Image (cartoon, rainbow, N blue to C red; front, side):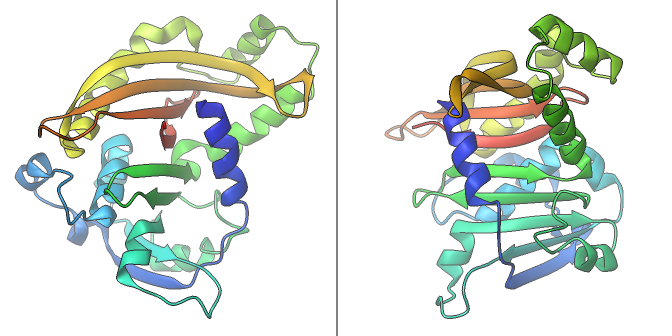
Length: 260
């Protein structure tokens, strides 16, 4: 199910047009720890802050430098702009300087910059998905490795894993305990930010998955798929189910997907 959502997301963001921008220094946009801990998903939802909080949680190294952060949305010029529309779907770009913001802001350069996160929120304030690309999560290297592996359909999964280890993979299928241990604090913080508690974590390393291109073709994944539930602390709210993917070289987040 998560793989199907991923294909839909990748098609949707294959070509995006950037129109509206809000920019600030990362240090100026960071809330105090006490405020972060108190953050919950009660309406009205500050989806910009939620998306930034996800980035801070899974990419804490970005907060250690004087990086610049920018939020943007896009569409045709005759599409009416509104705060509600902006907060339901936007991108967040993080770079080392304002000049890098301009350099990597085009659709052709996304993935080459430090980090770009495409986000879509539901009307109830929950994340529908986030798609993260950039040097911070080795996006282009990961895509290049996937393409290389797909060029060798004769390789067994064990041969693929051997190649991954040769390329410096830190979190392969033989390191599940270390991976989940390293991931747990971030998942706990994410669940808390969403106003709930973590439950039913399941992590599976995917070497390949079946592809819609045909029954004999299996697309390379080379990533961890982590499913879990967030049980709301407020009664009456439904349990939310999510799937996250992480690249294997450094265990960095790639996608957050709400499972129907």
